[in-house]
Image 1 (cartoon, one colour):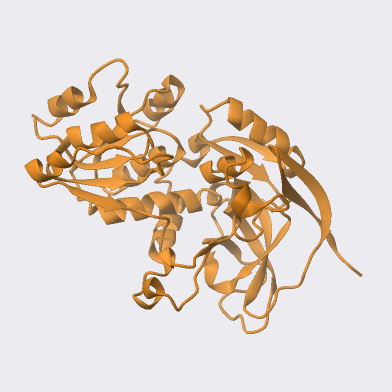
Image 2 (cartoon, helix red, strand yellow):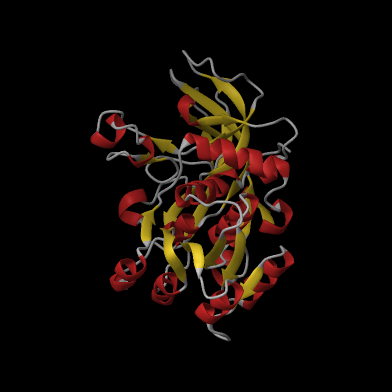
Length: 345
């Protein structure tokens, strides 16, 4: 007898349709994951706005910030067992390109991002390649576990920055990824300041115990110099995606400071290259994550290094996905909105 499940299909024109569709058994090398929760990320909002229609089409199940448990196992899979709590690292590499052969699978030249280039986690059962799975501790709540993918982004950013305990850190942009970068940097021992213009997000940052600067009300460079006796920030994360953020990243960096470009900019920003010469700055590109970043993210979330209850600002059932996207579009103060896809807890 055919089993049916609910799935949310992006239909274009800022619309989703929740429909019943057939479940399919996992193929060799695949695992079927019963989805518990799936977060809405900035890329999902780009899809919602129609900016990625050429890539995803109008019949795509999106979503990748998920948690769940193994429901079925395809032939040849031995790493997991039915019932294991898991998250998916949603990257499928080709294995043959120059990046893959050099060991950089996460930036494969032919990378498929699951949930964009393939169907994703906004469905009750998601079949994925077994190599994308990471097992979770039994004690970790599945709603909290849905944060692991974005936390892994932050772990990758912080790891590439080379942050050392006691160094001064500025995070420019206090949105979801910026806030997670700040928490992971603090967990690594950094002295963190968040620069943000949204007063609601500033309030959340202060609730989380961070020093903050609103650059609309005070000069960020002056504030950082005052905190550091004129030294500047050892590490700067540019997470705002704005030209003022790019201007600030070079202005507030210390001599030989490291700047990590986290945000995806819609247009090419202008960068003050003179500052790289004058103070021997380093600019570091960071894209997605590697397996070790996922394992670190699991450890941080499980240990409470990320305040999951504060980061998760609302949860909606899959049947209300349309309203959830509309609300997030009109309420940019939310940090992380989750969709409750299945009945797991």
